[in-house]
Image (cartoon, rainbow, N blue to C red):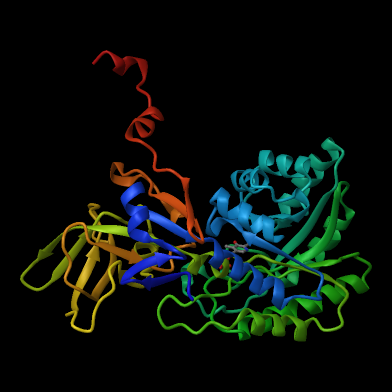
Length: 422
Ligand SMILES: *Cc1c(COP(=O)(O)O)cnc(C)c1O
């Protein structure tokens, strides 16, 4: 049984009718399935069984503390890209020794905090960061274990906005410059180069770009080891895609088979940083119909969720599946509609020309595959409170991030003294 399914004609998350959650918490609301998170995490753990592997869940995909705690209990590490995410991961109980600190630009405060906490590894992708780490580590009397993220110059075959492994992208160190940087790292006090990292993009649906990038990583790893740089770890990043529409991404097992094939016989530990593949299909966004609007040429369905809640369609023209909360029948007449939010932007559109059943005010729709890069990208544009988030486990559920009140939203602002009188 899939975690989101119809039962008695109503869409459920595990054993809970989504309508029950919506009634109690209001809409829009994100609903996550514990079973789905566990199953997708375990698909990694199982696929790499027998290899020395740390699966560091990419926190940026979904940073809910409850999700992080759930994954930590499964044995996951974390891949974080800011001091904030590092704090979330630690607060959720991920041991620092299983946390990778990635990111193209880290501040000194963030680096200092990471070293004090003792993260497993800092992934460096700009030369100056090595010098900063050396200074900070020396001052703190710590050692910075670093991996250098290389840019393997492969085309991940994904959309340009989320491709990161081409020479033209801002990410990583050019392959040809990497060896010199490893030697530099080796020479710096307080810095210990421990590994090579690579992450070529997101929503990748083919194995070939991975295989190409992995071969380049293996060659470099062996060359550097032969030179006497004592590397021990290879971080292969994340990026494995999911099915939003009709994509057919490889199974985690097929991906693991490529890893085993390329790195056969190599003495190294491996790190993976999956985000979307763990979170994407584990969550949905439940929204309520406000009203419909029929123009001369088009049917618009206006819902109470908007681009501030889920920006992927506006940002990347991304496709999300949409299901009515009440199961359609064979007699249901579907007509094409644009599904839009109330925000004053034409890009505030979840779907164009999508077949939808007849709908009335307060009917609910469920936007699928919203567990990754959904709630984390939310903002309060148009004075809209961020959607609540709910975690379901079997027949239990709980709010894991409540919707802020308008009072709380106002409380974060203040007037300068010269305007207080007015
Ligand atoms: C975004 C990111 C990930 C996760 O990517 P997914 O496509 O969600 O798996 C992993 N590693 C790094 C360095 C990233 O920036």
